[in-house]
Amino acid sequence: MQSLKYLYRIGQGPSSSHTMGPIAAAERFLKVAPEADFIKVILYGSLAKTGKGHMTDLAIMQVLGEDKCEIAFDYDSPTNVHPNTLDFIAYRGGEEIERKRYFSIGGGEVLAEGEEKREHPDVYPLKSFTEIAKYCEEKDIRIWQYVEECEGKEIWNYLAEVWQVMLGAVARGVAAEGVLHGGLGTQRKAKVLRRQGHVDESEETKMNRLICAYAFAVSEENASGGIIATAPTCGACGVMPAVLKYLQHKRKFSDEKILQALATGGIIGNLIKTNASISGAECGCQAEIGTACAMAAAAAAELYGLNLDEIEYAAEMSIEHHLGLTCDPVCGLVQIPCIERNAIAAMRALNAVNLANFLADSRKISFDTIVETMYETGKDLKVMYRETAEGGLAKKYKG
Ligand code: SF4
Image (cartoon, rainbow, N blue to C red):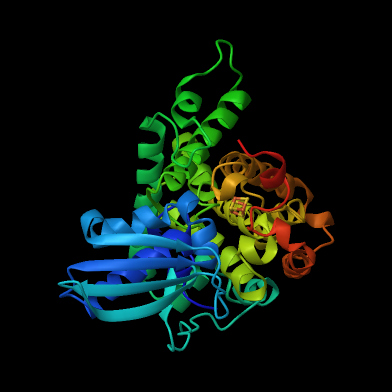
């Protein structure tokens, strides 16, 4: 398994493949053609079809300069190599001087045409939860200590940066108001959720409202093109910060403890990424929100000091009860159902931890089995339910 640095990525929402990747491509092309006075960009395939909704054009313009580029959408040309293809053509004095094709291959990574896929080196020798749990048990260490062993102490600096980005997104999100970009008229709700308690609000209702406020805050920041940390993706980036921010607020956990929880949740996300998928386009929303819920449940279980069995059960349950969840974003925007879904998954993660605490001794299904099941279920989902915005809610509701 690769480093957690490739799971928790810091960048601009709302999509690692539709904003982070194209931004990286634009930055690379600027280095190839620094003398260009004008650049034409052509988006193909999925980048053309859902690029407006994902703000791909705005993200590229931010890098190249609004008055120095033109973005064209080619809906018809085939994309035989990869559905996320984009061309950059540089001009100087009206003459073409350079041209390059890039592919946004997911997770914010890009490849130039003809370039080999660079696999990041494996830093974790163990690839299943069963193996990791056995190792931790034998050495009498917690999962975050295994992370430190494999990644080195410098991982804490990286996770500290991730945590600051998460907190920043929460802070900006709960302060923002207005309507999100994209034409659906989606109102930002985090600020209202944070402030507007009922007069005789119970502790439980308050808890749910605050968790939802934090999840909405980060997801709305993502939807508006703000800086977020993928956990494990842009669309599902609100779950982890919501749970961790709430628990830190309520239980006063130190930043050090929060980083350890991020490491434990990261192992869960990494196992799913390695043995199945965290991509909505590949396995539906169960792979994104289901994974985020499992990561948050494991992180919360770590904060509460639960044992390996209970951590596994909390993460397993979180995936089990998201099985089959489709990806059907209305108008291709990461707003409906995505934003609410982050909030529901955050609440569900805490429920899973509570149940795991009581029932771990009677559980039947292992984490590794549920990951395998999720992957198979995802492969069985019709394409219309895998981030094509052609089925489900995306078909029934057009806004
Ligand atoms: S519905 Fe699709 S786009 Fe939205 S969070 Fe789920 S997987 Fe991501």
